[in-house]
Length: 233
Image 1: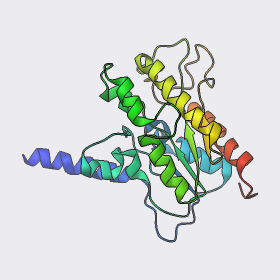
Image 2: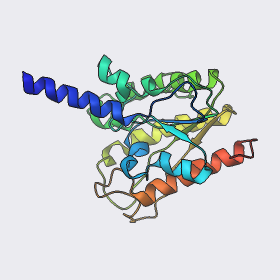
Image 3: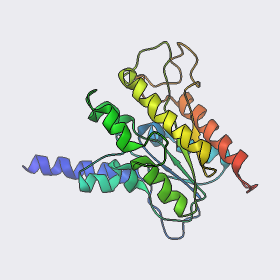
């Protein structure tokens, strides 16, 4: 029992350390939320969020957590960031950058209930569901929102290969929302990786390499620069 309690405490401590805290006087105008695609390489300042910060020369608060999901029932670890919606902190954000959904498909639907789970995440027209709820909350507070699509591994097998069609469907729905919402951008990574190129992925062929993180960050930062009236970006 003592060992179990220690392991639980360590888990909570690690989760709490994964998300940046937001102070009342914080100057950052950009928030990132999501799972390990954004958080990977955080310890070496090479995560997607870190590189966006470097490109724009603008502070970015990164609250993404490896393993985070859209649907997550456990209350304590969910509040610490395993539930992506709980990563949001109200503040005067200009931009909220998001990703997610991959862990919900990979870990939770068991290749049997994916259609139902997808519909709960986002409706066919992109207007309702758990994902639009997260987007709407940020937009209601005045932020513009960018949803970042997942890396692909064309010509190379990866751990997410069996979820490819379901992931494509979610991203198609996000793109439909972006087509009708002037304050929402879906940034696809579907064409980012050349056929057979392993260099954009880490050794596990799931998470981005440092090169992959930089390539993702360049696309996202480009959207912010092109869409923002503020010359500081």
